[in-house]
Length: 94
Image 1 (cartoon, rainbow, N blue to C red):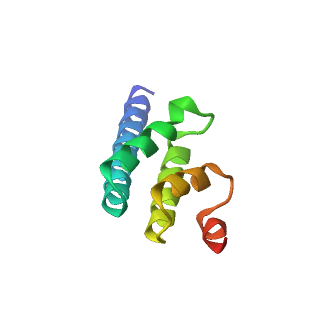
Image 2 (cartoon, rainbow, N blue to C red; image 1 turned 90 degrees about the vertical axis):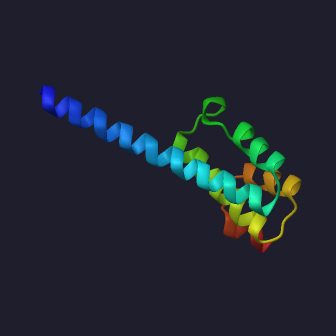
């Protein structure tokens, strides 16, 4: 039981590290597509502790913002659109 618990803790730590790496990559991509302020605003606006979604939900929103910015949508509008329930493909169809 003790070994299984330590393995579980290690697996959770590894998952958290991967999530943080993904967050860093997405924020760097958002900064490259827009600017530092947009990346910081996104991290603040979509922070999971402010919402009822998980860290994965937060990463999903960052990914969606990256996709919308890459399509040429201005940063302020992109952040508004990502707050909608539509996925990135639906947003880009408008």
